[in-house]
Amino acid sequence: LIANLRAAHTSGKSAFGLDMEKGITADMVELGILESFHLKRQVVIRAAKAAEMALCLDNII
Image (cartoon, rainbow, N blue to C red; front, top):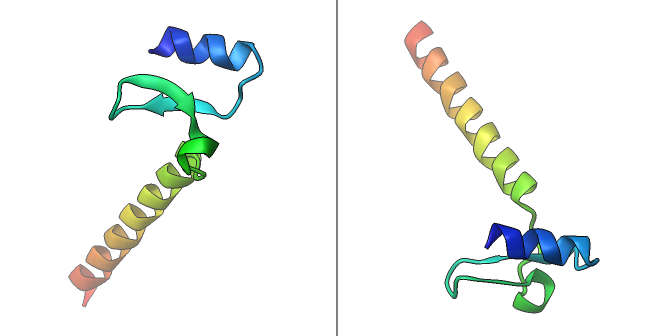
């Protein structure tokens, strides 16, 4: 799958990604997937940091 994805990106298909349900590479715009992995990763990291801060404050109080 990764080789297919790299080939698609090399040929100019920058919107291609992995469709893990079907096990293929596909155009993410056509599938309606418009959020990037980077955005989702940042959301998870910031949520974890917020939870960590809440736990630290709870220990202080």
